[in-house]
Image 1 (cartoon, rainbow, N blue to C red):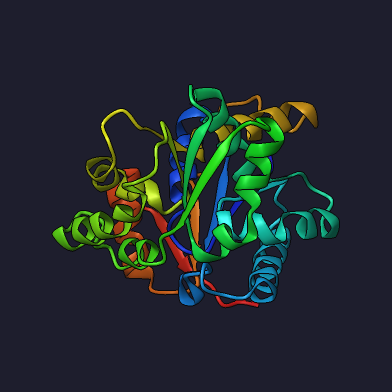
Image 2 (image 1 turned 135 degrees about the vertical axis):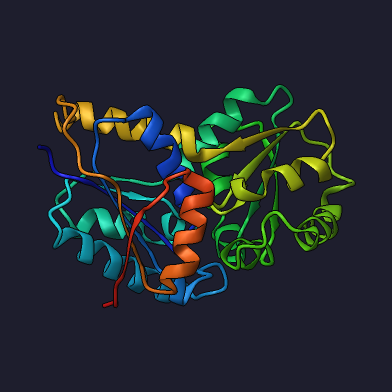
Length: 265
């Protein structure tokens, strides 16, 4: 049986990536670590995010993972290169795949990026989009209220819709045909976001594109599990087991997920 792929996030948002992995990479074992206790990362300093990301990566390295997916846009923006330097397994982030999908799908090169405050301030999406499409115009919007809605399990509520409507009003005078969900928590709010944006706007989640990059790396380093023997997904949270488990059940449809509490560092 092959080694597992590690997935880390500031909380439950990275489950959107796990959802695609379960479908696209059915033979791979997954260990997930969500730092719900210190979530959200979007309002943290870059130094704090780097420290927290290192702690999570080191914890999963102790569990003998073969690859790490940083399924957090904020952590990808400020800590990806640092993690790649520190560990000898392949590390995949979520920003390059998301930017690539947006550039590919935009007909006008007018692209909106919805992200956390730290992701937007880092300019990581804008830089990557401009690298891939120098003529692009990027409209980046910080949405600091979105992650707390998801972490509290209120992502289907009327409060969520009201908050999202109010936040996205700030883009009402911008003309764009693609919007990137620049935080892995945001796909859980996609229905509300869709309702608040013009009908012609295509919404891009980086999850599918990220898993495509994971598969490329598995093939490149000959790490793919070629058997159908795999462990059930294992989930760790630094926060409430019960709250985390409820979201895993709801979002991933796993009836009795193995969710364990973990302390960092």
